[in-house]
Amino acid sequence: MSFEPVWGAPIIWYLFLAGLGAGAFVTAAFLAWRHPDAPNMRRVAYVIAPIAVAVGLVLLMFDAEAGLHDPLRFALLLSNGVSVMTWGVVFLSVFMVVSVVALVLNVAKRKVPAWLNIAGVVVSVCVAVYTGALLGVCRPFPLWNNALLPVLFLVSALSSGAASVLLVSVFLHAEEFNRVGVLKKFHFCLPIIELVLVASLLFVTSYNSDAGWMSVASLLAGSYALPFWLGLVAVGLVLPTALETWLLFFSPKEFEESRGAHYISAASDVGVVVGGFMLRFLVVSAALPILFL
Image 1 (cartoon, rainbow, N blue to C red):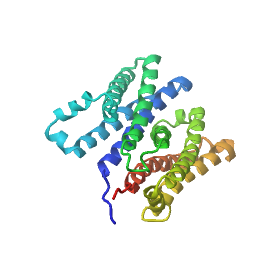
Image 2: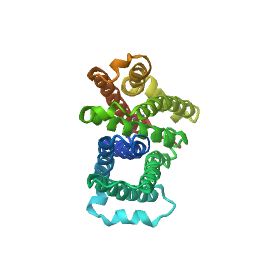
Image 3: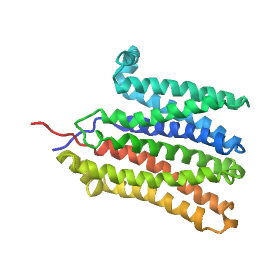
Image 4: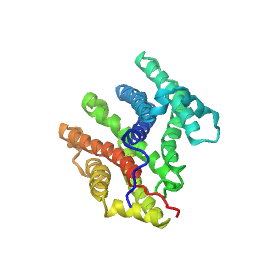
């Protein structure tokens, strides 16, 4: 029996970009806290955050064709206070306001207040968790209806957002990139945590039902095995961890700030971003529903 996925490419990109934008804002706040001597990197993060989420929202609107033809339908989402989508609209709206205000202040060379950064971090976490909870409301899909999925999407969002900021900064602001050691070490831990969460999600899902087992089997040894093992595990998780482990703990001190080290870091960050997208693609595409006869 064949099964047509519920959501397609626009939703996958929306989930990815919303998480990446949220993670970029958290990175901006982290830089303001631990690396105040990296103002240009903060600006990169403040720019990425609203743009990524805005592009994702545009894709969402194009996917929801009825909403394009009748925009008032989006307003109806606010009428159901117990709906995950309603809370998603609230989180995304507040995020856009906070992130745009922070960007305007930063571009105007005015200090972004600490309270605004804290508020942005809170709503960023809500946005990242919401992208996983949105899938979780589809209860017939064991791969989605799992308490680990919002946590996994949160960690992936933080990792992808930080990677996008580091990737841009290593080429545009190399001197500051060399000074943000705390951010690099924090970011180093995220793919490791993500790998553990992916394994846990698959383990729990495989014992949930026959549909859950079939979804996991399609990822491990079926039609999605190649993108899973190559795109997500190898490129998105293992390779970045291996490269950053060598750079942070085993490479010569004089090599850390060289251009060669920067290219290796860039390759690692590209892998993390690719892995963030592949995670959403695989979770959305490989999910199979429980069939009631």
